[in-house]
Image (cartoon, rainbow, N blue to C red; front, side, top):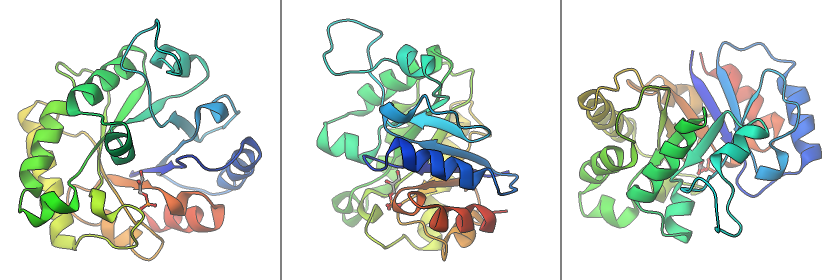
Length: 234
Ligand code: 13P
């Protein structure tokens, strides 16, 4: 079983999500399918499709205007939450410490955090990819994890760019993440690949060692794109 997660970012509508759920419920798959949607869609009846949020507060409750707590998203049905997406790190200055606090809040509320890690183009050019990824995992994953977590490797330079790393680069990144998780006592944690996944590259990417599934942006917005990807992943 692989894990396939759609990240709708700030797109879609409740009506579009209802349509997508109806389409996805027609297909047979062994894969775990999750859609991470805007907060306003989390209460929609999603059948066997799991819904997740795309961010959560690092705080439990209180005077944090505009923030939404893990307890609140759990109350409306979120089973998953993306934390530390590169767009949050880039536009909201989220550090590994903040990401770890958010993941901890998710875990305390029975929500599986999808913790994103990945290097920028500058870091890649400077030959720092492996060091950055390793530090991201060590510093973004909470201590003493006893419940499921998911890691997503998203090379930041490849997101929405229509380009992907080479097979070797993906294999190397996933090996470093798997080794780091193993060192932390978290063997078996699914490690997803994300950035410019489409129907033409999905099955090749999931065949790479230590790739446990996919985190998909643009190609998760339409059933016509997402369903063939889910069906191509065995
Ligand atoms: P794209 O698949 O559009 O490159 O987005 C990847 C992503 O950011 C998923 O979280």
